[in-house]
Amino acid sequence: MDEPSVESLSDELVTCLEDLISVLRQLPADPDLSLNAALVVRHCVANGPTRVSVLAEQLGVSQPAATQLVDRLQAEGWVRRTADADDRRAVLTVATATGRRRLAKRHATRVRSVAQGVRELDASQQRLLQAAAPALKELVSTLKSITRNGDAA
Image (cartoon, rainbow, N blue to C red; front, side, top):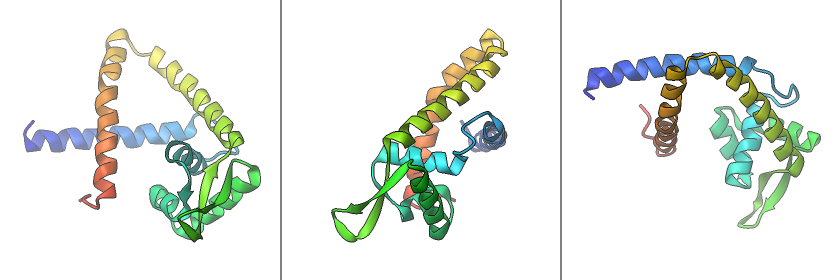
């Protein structure tokens, strides 16, 4: 694909994904588990014990804001803090069984809502979405790598 086409596709993707994120934020979910709270629990489930500084970076918020969020999640029993075996000064955030259950319930609720919308599409649009899913997953992986390496424009 030539550069102008890549730019055009990227523009269309960004617009569409921003609209999708906006809609996803409005879908029914656990009212006690905000999007950022869910992202913290999800990150800890997927990546294991995590420093608050890493969570702040992942959320795009300040470390004090991430600390407050972790404090709230810990008070609710969704995460716990534990000492870092490699650095006694550091504390790690770990998802609890309660946090994992709440996250799974939130995810299932959202899947049902999205499935309702997908059912409204015709079969050809459903096939297009299904075909695009692997490429979107790969794009997410690539963008995470670029962001981690500091190569983002």
